Image (cartoon, rainbow, N blue to C red; front, side, top):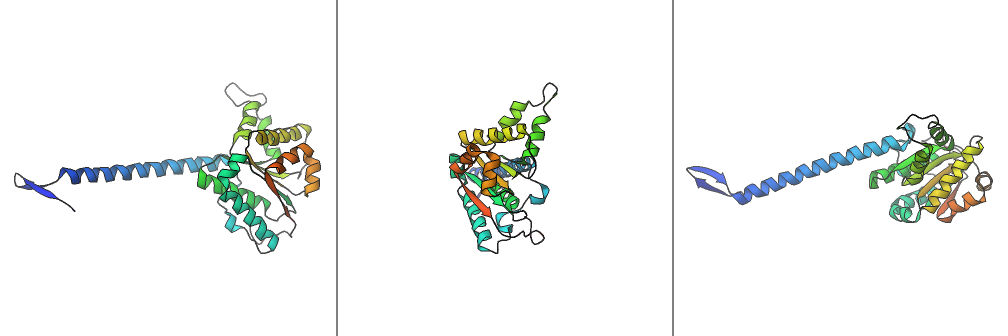
Length: 236
């Protein structure tokens, strides 16, 4: 209730009310500042994640899940996001394998979008070729530019690394070595990793090698996308 008292013929607010008003304004200012900082952080995280424009802003609910297999894949991905803090602690992995156009990249990016929004986590998305080009861009660098070791360390240390379309193209020996180094390094440091591939599980194991596949399966789930492509019906 607003209180006032008379001084020299004019009504003045009491000190207690003035202090309360000042505290409310201070809290409101702090909330505005925190919200602005959060929005700035979100913008930076999204800009550096590398998630393609096609998948920016997509959620797990946007995934077209009509068959039982699609619904199960969607539910597993939702559970992964819901238990994100546990996935971070143990270095939880997901391997999405199967046919082209079945929604693997959509779900992987939707998970990335979700953990950025909910937890302000760092995410990196790319293909093996993308990461290989990033490494090669350091060759012949000028002083002050990133080194190869710094690029690899950055990929090994983000909260969530997404490696998309493994096996879609022929890979050089150096790219295969990079792939193993990333998978192995993140497994050793309990870092969460998601990989997608159009190869089936056995083909992917042959491509990656037994050691790398064992590391991915150690703390994670393999989902086989064995339904028909739904491109043209929804983003996939």
